[in-house]
Image (cartoon, rainbow, N blue to C red):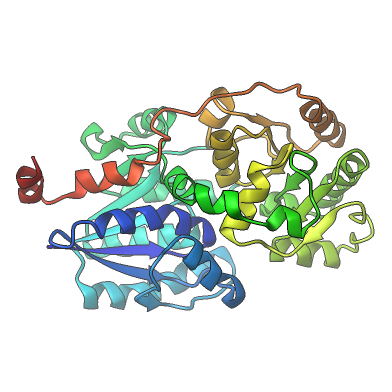
Length: 368
């Protein structure tokens, strides 16, 4: 029996860990799963809905580290997580994504010599001003098993000197969660509740510090979105950080043409995403989800750590120039985008591949 600690800290982590835990539950003789929620991001109103949408079990351990600077948050996770690992004595720790909880867990495991698996390894934006980029690089160097979502990630890891035997191209667990949720997404009434017509609106997400912490950048983006809203309704589920910065900068009147709503549960958000005419975002996960769903995506960044969404999918990088945002949005409204295709192994079976690799050798032999 392998005892596995799964570490999550922020909402994107939940979508990535849920299919892995579900797959391990199929083999109770081989795996004991323990879910640890660091509390890096925690909204009591949303967490229950999110866990229910993903059919994710309640955390076995909740650390409650809360917000803070990157250094404070990383240090708090390390201080709170170390005694949990010492007490639980896992055979393996599984971490996902690139948030501060991810790199904190990697550092703790490396210091304690606990085997570590990183899911969504090898992604690179090549922009170290992004805190997530630093987290990715450090985490991958400390991990014993690296599960990748796209072939570019394999190349990045090899270039950085990671041993080929550690790298496993398994596909995208985010897409596993999406595929499983498709029936619920189709049944969702989110668009009706908001009075939206299918393919009759644009959807926006905005949360990256480089976009929302700088008042000038935020004003530029909101101005472009307001202009787009004159041609097509724009629905904007507002991240708490973004809402605070809009209010602090006195930009609420600038965003009057936008339909600003509270953050949405997982299934309702994907329902809006699947039925939008286009999506504007700075989120990595949304780039992947729109690629699978075939929805035109305009990424408000100069780079992406998910190049397959651009080379194969429906994603376009448009940066932060106001005219470029408006021009690209109007082209997408009028069908001026490529259809794209789903990248290899984004088929809803990534967790199955991961768990097959992690199966104890005797279990693999008996299954064969």
